[in-house]
Length: 279
Image (cartoon, rainbow, N blue to C red; front, side, top):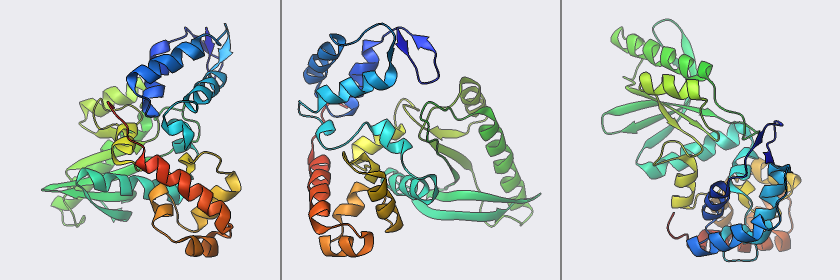
């Protein structure tokens, strides 16, 4: 049995380990070999955190992203909710063909609503709502999707009356976690979009990050909380942001030494250049 973060127990599931290994870029045969090594070290009552540590330890010994970065799910949870995660998500969605703009306060028929972004693609105008959880076991709940439905209706009714300047046709919630079962059922029934951890089956958050190699800065292995804060203050939210600037500029804006920045930049470049196959 494996003990989860909230104290619940569940049977050991090697398929979850295989999936995690593949998420870190391990080829199928490499992932299988790594999981067999981890299986030899597990014991009844092992905490999920210890299981994750063992997996990362073995992955660092083989060709995988673990040589340069930490667990992707953990790195997404470590992002500051605002503005970092919102900026990160808006940047990621640009790869999917959306024209993305920052949100703000928008009037509806009955009131004003703060939204995190506006997504435009063809004739579609989509409200973007971003939800971040520092505990990645926390699910996005039913209240979020209920409010989303009510907000969309208020915008649509406001547009008909001339109060809302844009005809919003869709609503998209993006989170670093999963929807609860109730929330997912309601979202599907009300035709609300949701992108989260392994949701939907195609185009999930983790799949998009890997497909476009759009790793958050928190993905870099060995990055300290202080360094993360310095990068955040300098508006460096992704690995690609780091690589887009000179060491001199980075040193000036973050206060980190060029030697340290050079080390992180090399790690970042290797992560970006690492070829993920079969995901």
